[in-house]
Amino acid sequence: MQSTNPMRAKEREWAFAVRNDAAMLASIEHCVDGPYHIINPDEFGRNLKAFQDVLVGAGVSGHVYFGKKANKAGAWLRQVSTMNGSVDVASAPELVHALANGVPGNRIGVTGAAKTGDLLWLASRHGSVVAIDALDELERAISIAKQSRSALRILLRVLPSSHPDSRFGLNRDDLQQALSRCVSARDHIIMDGFSFHLDGYTVAPRAELASALVHKCQQAREAGLRASTVCIGGGFACSYVEEEDWRKFVEQLRPSQFHAQKTFGHFYPYYQNPTGAAMLDAILQTTVADTTLATKLRVAKIDLHLEPGRALVDGTGMTVFPVLGFKRNSDHGIVTVAGVSMSLAEQWRNSEFLPTPILIQRGPPRRQEPIHAAIGGSSCMENDMLTWRKIKFPATPRYGDVVVYPNTAGYQMDKSESEFHQIPLPPKIVVAAETKGFVWKIDK
Image (cartoon, rainbow, N blue to C red; front, side, top):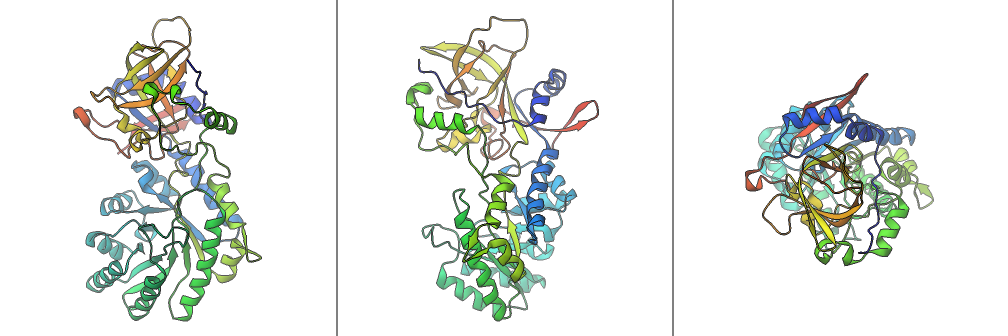
C-alpha cells in the first residue's frame, strides 16, 4: 500500500509531559470510564498574554476577546477573568456562563446572527457590547434598552465588500441608515464603533478594512457618536504540523491513503504562517496609504478589539480514546476506540483532523512491527471514523492501549459532541503544573 505522510503534530512541552505521565493517566482513567479531554488553562493564559503583549508593544489600546464557541470549558473563562481579558459570546447561556466564571459584563462582547430578546436584555443590564447585524435587530435593541432603562453599547457590523454574499453584516445603504438611527437614539444606544469578520487567514485584507473603518469612526464622531472602537473579529491562523510535512501531504494526496478510498472536499490549512499573536502583529504593522494600522489607531485614539478562538486554545488540549479492539481489513487494519467521532468535530464537516494520533501501548511487551490502520468509533454507524487516513503505528494496537489526539482544544473537542447510544460526553480534565508534576480535576 502507499505509505502515508507522518504529519507529526507540533506539541508543547506540557503536552509531552502529561501524555508520558503513566501514573497520572492511570489515575484519570480510574475515575473516567471512556474517552476524555485534557486541557491546560495555564497554556491558554500564555497565548492570551502573547496577544495582549502585541497590543501593548504597538502602543495600541484594545481588548482580546476569547471566541468562546471554540471550546465550552469553564476553565478558560476563569483564566480570562484572572488576566483582565474579555469573552465573545453568541447566546444567553454563553453570556451567563461567562458571568458565572467571573468575567464582568463590560468585558463581554455579543456577536453572531440575530440575537434573542433575552440576550439583548442581559447585554444591556450588564454593560456588554453587542455587534448589530441588521436594521431590525437595531430597532429591537433600542426598544429593549428603553424598557430596561440601561443604555446598550453596540458596534455596527459591516458587510465586507470582498464578501458580498455573506449573510452577516450591514451593506453600505443599511449601514448609513443604522448610523442615522444611532444618532436619533443616543439616549438609549451608545455606538462604540464598527466590527467585521473575514473568512480565511490572510493579513492584508484585515488591515485594509480596519484602516477604512478608522476613517468611518472619525466620520461618525462628527455626527456626535462615540465611535471609539474597531473590531477585526477572529480568524487568527494556527499551525498544527511542520511546513515540510504539510507540503508533502498536499503534493502526495491520494484516495488510496484513506480507508474505503475516502475523499474530502477540503482540509483546514494545518500549516500556516504567521500565526496567533504574530499574525496580529503583522496586521498592525501592515502599511495602508503610507501609514501602519497601528499608527492610524494611535493617532485617531481608537481601540482595537479582536476575537481569537482557535488561536487562544492552540496547544492547550488533547483527547484520549481507549482502544477497544483491532482487526485487519484488506491492506490495512481498523482500530476501534471507546467513544464516537462526534468528539472530533472535523469529521462531521466532511473533512479530517490530520495531525497524527499517538498510540500509547499498555500491558505486556509486544512485537514492534509497524502496521497501517484507520481509527473508528464504537457506534454502529459506518461513517463513525475518527481517522480515515491509514496511520502508521509502531505496533498493532490492542485492548487496553489508548490513542491520543494532540491539540484538539480548538473546535474539535465539543463542537459536535452528542450522547449517541446514550454514551456520556467525555469529561474535560483540567491539568495544572506543580513542583512535583501535574495535578488534575474535572472541569465544571
